Image (cartoon, rainbow, N blue to C red; front, side, top):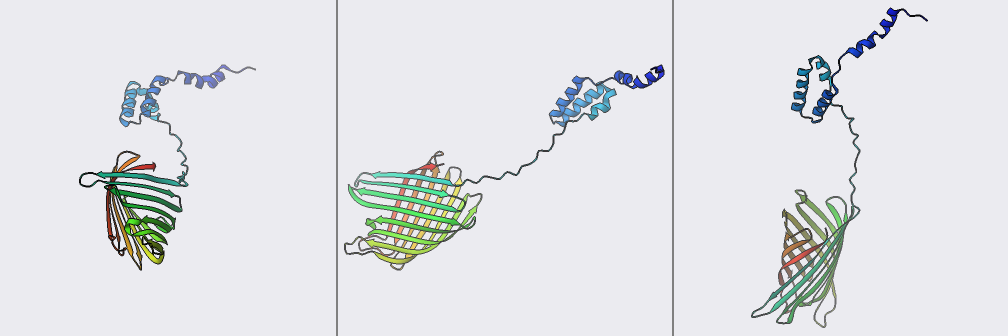
Length: 301
């Protein structure tokens, strides 16, 4: 089949012309792309202007070179995983000794544990104190506290608690108290300050140290407040006040703690404690005070 020569020229001329069109050097394109990758507007403009000055015939092509846009990442909804339970706890110990006209020694130990879930906050605390003066025992008491809080909301809760105390030097062989009530918790400044107010009603069972004494029972009311303040990094303050109000006696306890952080596991604690009993057996003081300095080891951290 025969094609006239002018038809062949007409068909293949565009291809021939395209091959003769000058192209922007590949190295120049790479330089511009590297400038775009810096995301610095001054570097990008300076590079493009330098290339345009050297290759004015490619101004349009140079201006058209842009950093390729990446497809917008799809944001996935991330649900924060709340731990099923959180354990906190510490062990505390202090020892004091004085010599001179009198020789006194006092040893105190305490263990506190707390398990918290989305709905529950369970507490266990044990405490013991033993003191001698001139090798004669002058004080000995032991305490065990159990409590459970059921959270109704972030601030409100119901709770039940029980406490056992044996303190013969206060005139009582033992005291047992159980109560049920409700509370409210305030938090300020990202948990730097927390105030916990509680009110409950229950019963108290006690027996004094006299040989003829029998166990007595009475209804009680128990108001309580617990305040913590993270004063600054490494230093915090705690204040606990609670009362057990009964028809035969009222016992009020106050504890002020100054806690200095040594490291992630160890604190130094300075404590001032008061315990006042409105009615005590004959020969027993109503007010007892304690001052101690000890180390606190964090079991869970």
